Length: 193
Image (tube, rainbow, N blue to C red):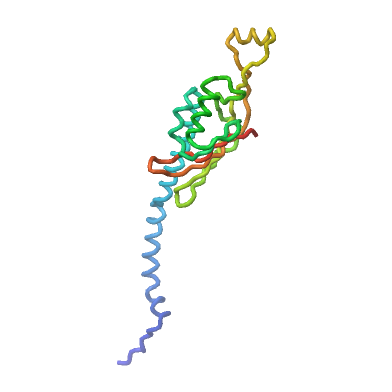
């Protein structure tokens, strides 16, 4: 009985085993593709947390309770809202107390809204998810106290109109850091478009 010599080359192994290997890999691919990557769900949760943090800041300003927003900031944060920048939570607290609580600031933000033609929000996670940046397109209602002493201004004040109000398209550029207490704002700037 003469048997043909067996082929022990690597090529022969793959040719003989190819169908068996191919079936196993093919069966595993759909299972791997269906399972979401764990980092993708963590990134989605972080993006949602950052959107909620920004919305909380906007609600505090709109409801005339900006001092409640101080907990949203990192201790060394920078804030710039249509005024020269202030740095640190103590300076931010003073800024809100002097400009927003008194009501006599030369220019204040009092409300925000999204315009139909504004670009979508952009949120980028960085440094392994420990830092992030975001851009939120937002129209701001800017208020300037009525300073004129003419009859028309006096009549407007008597009717409760103590400020000139206008909507200005613009955007927030925000930087964040993850802390032991969650995401905190490190830099928040609103600029007119």
